[in-house]
Image 1 (tube, chains in turn brown, orange):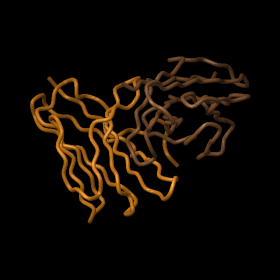
Image 2 (spheres, helix red, strand yellow; image 1 turned 180 degrees about the vertical axis):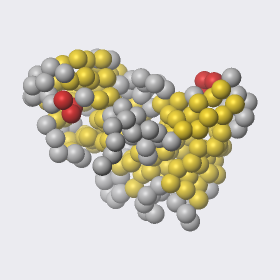
Image 3 (cartoon, one colour; image 1 turned 30 degrees about the horizontal axis):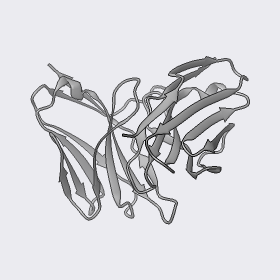
Length: 112
Length: 114
């Protein structure tokens, strides 16, 4: 069966520090991969998605970036975090863009 | 602008009652819809989905109804249990080619009272 791993579960970072969140999927090949952000009490905002290795589409201009160095690995990064980057970050995968998403357990990021 | 601490729509029901959570979607071209359940501090969990060629689909204790005429989606939960307490999101899928993407609604907080 397919599983998705996301870490760390919680992270507290100072403003201006770098960020690296990692997500891996097991049990499937060539998944579509996604990064979402969720502000407290709000809906999910799509940040990036990838349909293949090295292919990244950005939905929201910001100081975050994403990379897909391997088929089942998706990384969210920032060189310098802002206060507004705080939130709940979710990685997800799907078989295709027209199928349901399966989400990871999320990372609660607090930028202080 | 939005106020800090925007409140989700809420629904409070008694244990054992049926719950109906509603969602208005935005795009008449959307052809695939999904309901997710999200418990506090966890990632959203898939509940049920429906494609636009159907108007009703049933799962275990859940039913999704789709009304394309008024762009309305609902999730019915039978015999609601305390474990059903969570935020429920609807999502719609539209686009073209490789650009299909899911867009999520703002969510509804369901509270089940014992």
